[in-house]
Structure formats: structure tokens, C-alpha cells
Image 1 (cartoon, one colour):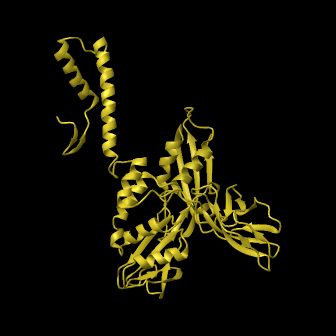
Image 2: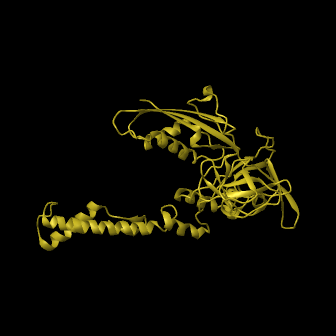
Image 3: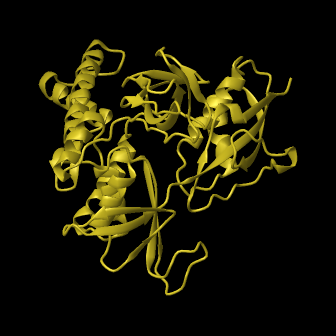
Amino acid sequence: MDYGVTKQGFKRPSFDEIREEVTSRVREIMGPINTGPESLIGQQINAQVERESLIWEAMEAVYLSQYPGSASGRSLDQAVQLTGIARLGATGTVVEVELTGDPGTEIPQGSEASTTDGDIFFLESAVELDGDGFGAGVMRAREAGAILALAGTLVEIETPVSGWDAVTNPDDGVVGREVESDAELRQRREESLTVAGSGTVEAIRARLLQDVADVIAVSIVENRSGEVDADGRPPHSFEIIISGGSNADVAAMIWNTKPAGIETHGDITEVTEDSQGVGQAVKFTRPVPLYIWVKVELTPNGTGDFPGNAEEVAKESVVDFGASLGVGDDVIFQALFGPLYKNIGGLKSVVVEVAASYDPAVEPDPGDFAAENISVGSVQVPLWAEDRIEVTVNE
């Protein structure tokens, strides 16, 4: 059998195949000798075979590293460059803030404040308070990643400035993202192949994700019919639900990539100039937060593998699962069993109930919690946090 690069791809011999070949060569040279695993010759053969097998594995890895479908890590970064894209780095959560204090006070760029959870945010540009002692600005998390800044939680001033008395965020921040995973990068590469043919849903989505700064997630819903759809979208229109990015940048990209003659729809209207300097109204939607509440009941099996910090692990497992859901993704309560059983040993049983609210400070009534899926609307995004997860451990 041929090994190496063949018409069917790279063919690597197994350990047993290599040993059989090496053993055959040794016997041809030395005659009918004992090559069993306990013999001296057999042990020497095994050492040689192990080294040769590792070399074959290395050659196979080099071969696979050339292709986006099989490459990983740095090799994948280089492979996708052939289609003109790069791995998306981690971004920090961005939040609009209101600042108050003495009129005329200038709060310098880089001034810091923190949330009630202790996450640090910095002011992206200086803000001067007006005659009423009020100013507005934008803060970004010091640490990149999916850091929450729920409405009313960014309230602690970390950088004292004379005349600056208070800070708060009236709305939830736009949550940042972690470094793009290999699987996400491969998927985006596939989507990017349609970019050149702008006008399609996948092309528009790919351009928004790839070319607009700070965009976290994009969902597009079309109404191809000749009637207004159930969510109020006009005939032959599409609605883009997008997290992150400035309104101006988002609108400009939508206008440059949308099909001619097809209307945009959404809650936000932004005017952007076309190539002839004419203002064009572009509509899109920011996702509506749907706050998910979870009750978890854990029963150990008594084997001793049950961790002492099971409550903490359970909350982290649920939040990590929730981070994988995006705009319009339904909450399938049964999907929570997988990460809980995976991350917590010594479990006899798990009970999960979920509920939802539109206010992170208002917990649903006990009767609202159920072992049932939560339907998420096409413009809603489910949000998860450890302080909305209750874990009970049965003795």
C-alpha cells in the first residue's frame, strides 16, 4: 500500500503496519530471530517504530495544516489568509455612560470606573460636564471578553477627579467577545467566500462581521413575500439584528452591500451618504435583551466525587452554555444537562427549570419557572448571569 501524499490525500501507516514492515526488514537481514515484545530485538524494534510513527504523524500534521478544514491554531490563521480574512481578536464590552459633577469639570480620557461585580471600564475620550454638571460618554472594559455591564451597575469611580461625583450606565453595555475559535473562524471563512457577490444574506452578514469594527453578532431575517409578515416587516424587505459597531458604520456597510430595490427594516434609522453624496435612510435593529433565570437542583450519588464547590461550578457551566447562544436562539432547557453532568462529578440527578424577564432586576414569579424551552423572538437575545442562577444541593 502506498503511504504519504496519494490521490486520496495523505495516507499514514498505523503503528502495527510500521512494526510489521520493520520486523520484516530485520528478519530479512538477521534471519528467523525472536522479535517478540519481550525480546531485546523486539524492544529495539518497538523503539524504532515509535519514532517512525511520530515522524509520520508530524508529516500528516504538516499536510493537514495547509487546509482550512483541517488546520488549527496558527496554521489555520495562515490558511484563511488565502481568502483575505484574519481571526477576530477579543473585544471589550462597550457601554454608554452618564457622568455628573461640578459644571465645567473635564474628566480625562482613560479615567476608570467599575461595575458592582468589580469589572474595570475606562473612558474612551475626555468628557466635559455642561452647565448643569452633566456629560455623556463611552466606556470600554479593560479586559476583553464577554463581560457584562447591566444597566445601572457601572457606578463606582476608580479614578478620582476633582468635580466628578458620579457615573452610571442607563442601558446594558454591548458585550464583548472572546478570541474567535477555530470552529468560528472556519465558518466565517465559508461565509466570506460569498462576500464578492454582495447582495445575498450571507454576503451582507459576512461583511458586517468582517469589516465593521466592534460588531459582535449579526442575524438577518428576510420577508420575501408580497405581504407584511407576522413581525411587521414590509413585503420584499429584510431586517438586520446586530450587536456592536457604531450606527454610522453599520448603516454605511448595509447600504454598500444590500440588493438594489430591496428595503431595509428595523427600529433604528440612520442616514448615510451614497457614492453621489445623497443621504440614504438605512434601517436596522439592535437586539432586545431577554434575561434568562435558571433554577438548578443537584443530587449527589454519594460516591465522593461530588465537588465541594458544586454550586459555583454549576453557575459557571450554565453561563458558559448561555454565551454560545445568539440573537433568535431558543433556550432549550435540556441542553443544560450536558455541561452540568460534564463539569460536576458524582451526580445522581439534575433538575433544571428556566424562566425569562425583560428586566434583570425583576425575578419571575416561582410559578413562571418550568422544565420547558423558552422561545426567543427573532430580534431578542438571551442574556445569562450567575446572579440569576439559583443552585440547590440536596443532602
